[in-house]
Image (tube, rainbow, N blue to C red; front, top):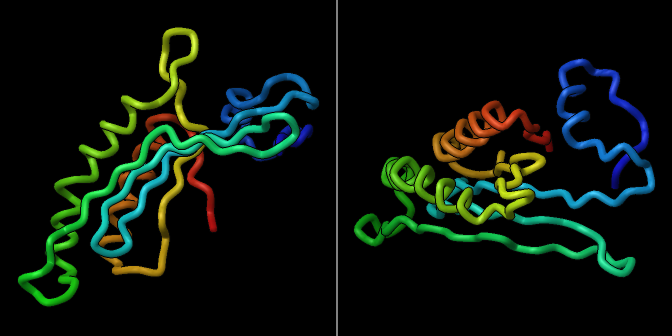
Length: 146
């Protein structure tokens, strides 16, 4: 839901200006790039939320996951899965960026980056968190807190 008041925090005023449509009655389509690295799956998705005929709708622009093969360990091995995240996450993000919808000939950036913060294996979670924070800084968007 788009709120009609300006933020008082100066750190997010530029973000607000980029997101603001200038009209309180306008409906905004919010889009997120989501990252999941809590266990042995490395997953990236792009989801857009909007309203169609008064109903909330979601559109999945991209979703792909890579699962590390832990069969040799007869269970999930933390260091092996971390290596899998490190090898696959950047490739999945790059592929997801290619599926961002175009607006005016340019790809529309996500409004925020979502990432799994827990529960999960600490080193694996940090792999996803660090990637999400880097993308958020580069795109000047927010990483929402849980």
